[in-house]
Length: 196
Image 1 (cartoon, rainbow, N blue to C red):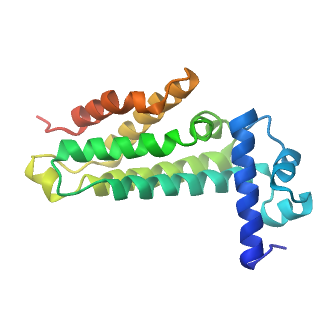
Image 2 (image 1 turned 90 degrees about the vertical axis):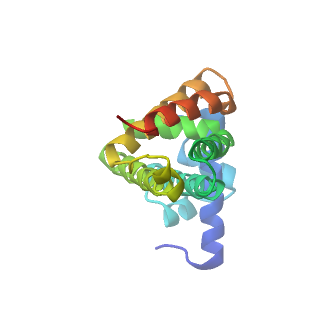
């Protein structure tokens, strides 16, 4: 049975926040359902009314977090700005958004791929959402006027994968994601720039 209505949404949100807090403090693997319900100040029964298991809660947390990041990036880009500035706006927005929860960002990049077939499907789905976002952001009059070709799925995937690895490495080394802004933007500009 699933709890519905505002109360159900409130419990679900509390559980998701509690898992995010657990990941930030202890990491995904060490955070248990018991930790989540303790932090959320709810019961195991309530947890299982909303999620089949910890992985399902994690999947929902990542899906929602990544959707918020995509919206933030999209809203940050001015399609009338010079294309290099659009790249800087997009990269900066991604780094800013991911930097608000660096441990969750690292968990998404490092933990999710190791969780099996269902997690792999989620990873592909999230990556596909990012690919579509990149393709939309790169399909502007300003970019076409600069001679840039549309970005296909492979190029977008390379771009996304490279930025994800840069973010993971920075978090693992204890550096802020803001330190990546210029090198990441320059790499994206080089990747997207006019091709011969």
